[in-house]
Image: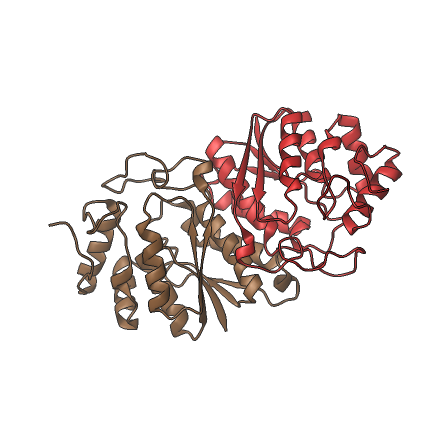
Length: 219
Length: 219
């Protein structure tokens, strides 16, 4: 069994890939370099893929800055507090693009599944993290590919979609996922800032799970 | 009204964009440079966008050769005759990727529609040219975007999906679409080869429509 695993360099995709490995899949890791400001995400993804023993790790470049419109790719201020609604860090159609690339890769290597670490609990502001979005994309995967036409569709798997950050950390620790190589901070540096919405979320997750975060933080 | 129009450099997308313009849309043209062997497609798309008076034309690079697997991006022999089933020129998940980029662009410029020149009649071998695939992607566009959540989804429009090549040529001629800038040949050169499956299809379309093909052909 082969699985394409989307790796962002973050915690959720790392634990998701570790779960795929645990299920017996051979991992074909995929990272999309979409022009994110944080280059550290790519190097983290590489380390995670290597630590998980992925068969391959492809990094595909698709510079979404061409289209503009997000704090993660433009110079909009990154929020320190999560607010209700769709956050300014939303990148238009990001997960649709990620899943499309994963689908192409899965067809090319004849993979049975695609694993994506979307999470509807802590980031419910992103429309493309919801189960109904994933179900819609599953239809696209069935109807838009050779394998789907042949009656053996590629399955989209989202094992952490309903988990809290605490549960994700606990599951990752249990599986020995390489959490030390992940990076969650919106900013770049030797140490995580500890203050942005993403750092806070991560920090609370480790704390509640009773796991020590292996990442160095500012002060 | 704004529309993102995918332009491949070919006939179908040119006529599709001309139909969008006729409907009153302001055109935001988009071409994906996916590492196709035929660089002429990109320059043709640029000329078509300019001739149609597009407000913008974005070319996004996403080298799908990273994943391998197609006569249009690899060095597999291009067929001279169409055969039943999924042809070797099929690029994994190509239209899914194209539509994903179009969706990101549409969100960024707040476009009301995406026009794509898929055709289910002459190329029924491609799974991602079928109406059921387009309907599945429409659900993704509704559920995976901010605009969809707000109840004002981006519409996926495929005005030539059920048209024969003859009808597409006739409609293009009627609208004054810049057919002289389009390129259909699988190969690259000063003149079209006239022999590949794509040239033959185009040629028959012009012939049946009683329109003179403005492209130069070999002998």
